[in-house]
Amino acid sequence: MPERPLIGAIEGGGTKTICAIGRSWEEIRDSEKFIVRTSSPEATSARIFDWMRDRSSGSVFSAIGVATFGPIDFATQRLSSTTPKTAWRDYSWPDAIRARFGDVKVVIDTDTNGAGVSEYRWGASQGCQVSVYLTIGTGIGGALLVDGDPIHGMQHPEFGHMFVPRVSDDSFPGICPSHGDCLEGLASGPAIGQRWKTGGAPLSPTHPGWELESKYLALAITNIVAVCSPEMIVLGGGIMLVDGLIEKIHFETKRQLGGYFSPGEFDLNISNYVVLPRLESHSGIIGGFALGLDAATTVA
Ligand SMILES: [Zn+2]
Image 1 (cartoon, protein in one colour):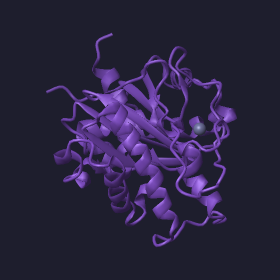
Image 2: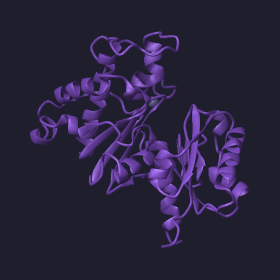
Image 3: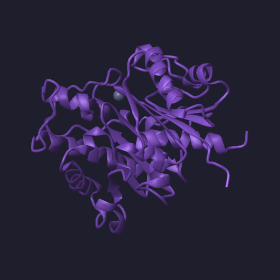
Image 4: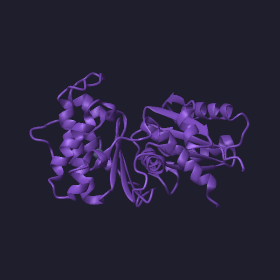
């Protein structure tokens, strides 16, 4: 049996960039990752590429997959000129990778699309014809997958920038530089920090702020159910690591759905419908692997 192709996987996050190399998703999950603080694209990618080169011990990469923060301009395969991370505007991962590793196949997609693909193939949403992956962390992003493929359309969906109604007397203005009080502006990690003036410290799991957070996320989930009719919604990202939050979201989501949708699916089994990632914190980097694997095994 021929050796499986060697794949490089890169997860480009807003605060840290992660890479790993391997020949299977399990190897990516279990092997050492290299993690650097996301600084300038040149400095960040140079350290990543050095590690990948050393780690590969002279083996040639069949493909490299990049799952990165966005937005991404797919026509040019570059980060968009509108990304709020100004140093990364118009940055081309494919050009940088080929300048270092030669004529290797490179696939780039959003970090949420990558994570959504990995959860479909090897994680929680296996077998779902239509599924949604949401990440709630420094930002809020989402992937809508049909038969395991994330839809792109005009660009790619931006679930975090949907609007949700205000909860009762909440007057926090929101922090999205483009929209103010969109979902990301109200419910992302930085929004929670500014709303409750935590000075960078995390809220304790018993803080009443989590009730409000669960209401906003439940409103977003209700919108997603109404528009996309997914068979499962996977909630990832650092905020979802908070003890008890998923249970609060289940309670609020069931309430918001109002019994309108199929009771058997949504009311009785909400905890099997809105779920945490089965690949846990590895969804993103395994997503990078999945992108690379597809490129390596696709005949051009
Ligand atoms: Zn926004």
